[in-house]
Amino acid sequence: MEKDIFGCKIKKLKEYFLQNSFVKRTLKGDVFFRFSCSMLVSRVVTMSSSIMVLRWIDPASMGIWQGLLLAQSYFEIMRLGIVRGLNRELPYLLGSGDFKQAQEVASTALFYSIFVGLVGLLLFLAAPFVFHLTSKEWLTGLISMGIIWASASMSSYLQATFRAQTDFKTLANIQLIEAGLYVITLYLVAMWGYTGMAIRATTVPIVVTFLFYRMRPLRVPSRFSGVCFKRLVKTGMPIFFASILYTFAMGFDRLILLQYGQIELLGFYAPVAAIISLTMSLQTSFSSYGNPRMAFRFGKHNKLAPIWRDSLLIAMAAVVVSIPIAIGGWLTIPFTIDKFFPQYVQAKAAIQLTLLASILWAVKTANVSLYVLKSWRYLYLYMGVFALTKYLFPYYFAKQMDPLTGVALGGLIASFVMAIVAFLTTYLSTHFDSHVAIPAEVRTP
Image (cartoon, rainbow, N blue to C red; front, side, top):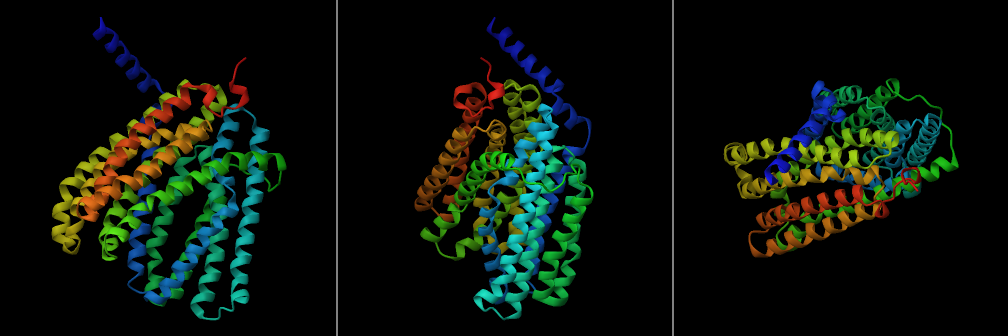
């Protein structure tokens, strides 16, 4: 009897999987595949080109550029999480059929994106006069950063509208064009050094933003609404602070290596960081693809059960894709390191452990439900445990063995713990209404 019940449950899960609209659309066409590949290609090209640029830029000039990039990262607080809020609110409103409110929210986000872009541009242009910076490197870099900031403000808004309209095919094509431009424009750096790098860094974002603008699926005027602004901030700020905590925790490995090892260990950690970045990028594509679709369905049907099932499907898909990548990397890394990168032999074990951890980290993609349902309590619970485990385990094992291998082993154990936490927080957020910040229209008397 138990066997029949278990078999019946498996059959129902299989039927749901095959009949699920998200799965059917993914299996029917190549849109998701193209979107994922375009993200991965774009990330690989960006990383590779950044390394190649070092051939033509001296350390002093690159130090100025990196300092300006750091300054630009601090400007992020000005965005107030508006676009992050738009990523959730716009598809939800479209799904609920409230097209007027959706347009007002998009108009407000557009207005604020333009405003923040112009403010940042003016601040970078004013910096030479305020701080009396007269060298060519500083002037060129500040002008470039201002343009990059303004372009990024617009492009981030436009990308949110593409995802809300589920126009991932166009988004994938633009990402591939962006990757191609980064390769072609390397010639500018080879020809003109620092100036060429600045031209390259400003030209590509301008072209990409122009393409996003020309092909934008949602054409609304730039208009400010206090009510919509408050709504976007209320949704976006928790997501924004959670991302800051996540970024901060991801830097623990480097801090531990500096504390218990030598500065050279950060060099050996570089391929480990590259593996983390690439696998996370691929897994992020699942969340980026599923988030607006789930928000749309939630706005349309106001049901929690589909969110739970879709979250599991997204996590399962991310794990299934991560497994062959991890196995392939585990088998080929020793030969690849010995043959082509012998100076990184010390990092082989750390890379292999990180590949195993990437399979478990894929489970966190299920947490897309926390953003769709605005489950801020569970989101911060997850992030708090993540930060704690991401420090304690690598810290402990770095003292017990070779610091590089110890950090990687600690990261593997932390990923196991977080896979469980990701599952639990997703389950709780989709099964207990009283603990979730669900919109009032979902709650029935």
